[in-house]
Image 1 (tube, one colour):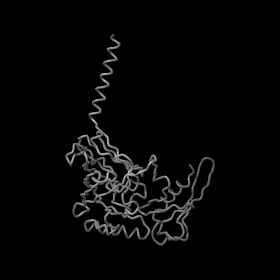
Image 2 (cartoon, one colour):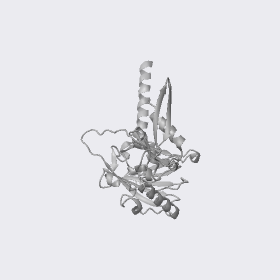
Image 3 (cartoon, helix red, strand yellow):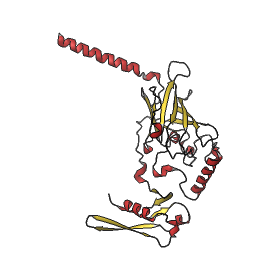
Image 4 (cartoon, one colour):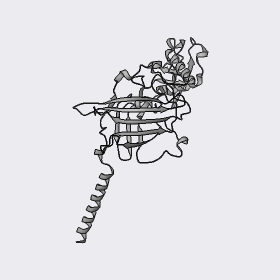
Length: 323
C-alpha cells in the first residue's frame, strides 16, 4: 500500500507540474510566428533599409551634416571599388537594426521568457527578453552588435490574445550601419532602437516590424516599417548554413580592402592598381617540418600602394599554409 501511495503521490506531482507549465506558457495566447520569413520585397529590397524608397541618397535618411558627409564619402569609396564603411565584408556581424533587413531567411521562436529571432548568416541571432527584467548594469562594459533587447507582449486590440511585441534595444557596439550602402550610425553606439513587431490584420502570412531609431547621427528619430512574408510550401522547409568566413576572400589591412584571387595573388579593391598586377605573390619552401614563405613586392606596382608590406606578407603566408 505504501508503494502504491508513493506512485500516486508522484503522479500527482507530475500532473501539477504539467498543469503549472501549461499555465505559464499558453501557446494559443501568442500570434503564430512559426515558419520561415523572407523580406517581402525580395531581392528588390537590397540596399534599401526603408523599403518604400530607392537605395542610396534617395533613402533621405535624416542624417546630421557630419554624418551625411561621412555617408557621401563612403558612397564615393564604393564607386572607386572600395568597401566603404560596411564592416560585413570582413564577416563582422551587421548588428541592429540591420539584422532586421532580413538579408537571409529569418525564424521567430516564441518562448515564455524569451522571443528568439534567428538568422543563419554569421548567426545573426537576437534574444528579446520578455520575463520582466531590466537592462543590465554592466551593459556599457559588455556591449553587443545586436544590443540588449527587452520586450513585452501586449494585447492591443483587447481580444484576450497577444498581438504585438514591443521591444527596446540598447547597449550596442560597432561599427554598424543600416544596409549594404553603408548608411552610418553614430560611432558612439548610444543608439536606442524601439520596435513594434506584429502580424498583418488581413494577412497572417505577412509580418511587420515598425522600427524607430534614435541615434546621435540623426537629426530626429527615424521610423521605418519592415515587412516579411512567410514561406509557403507543401513540402518540409529546410534551413541551410550560411558561413560567411567559409569562402570569404576579402581582407582588410591598414584600413585598405584587398581581394585574394583564385591564383593566390593579393589585389587592392580600389584605385588604379585594381585593374593592374597583383601586389604580392607567395613562394613556398618546405624544409623538414618547417614551412617558410617568402614575400616579394611586384616591381610593376608603386611602393606607395603597399602601406603595410610585412602585414601583407604575413597574411599571405597564412593563406598559403596548407590545412
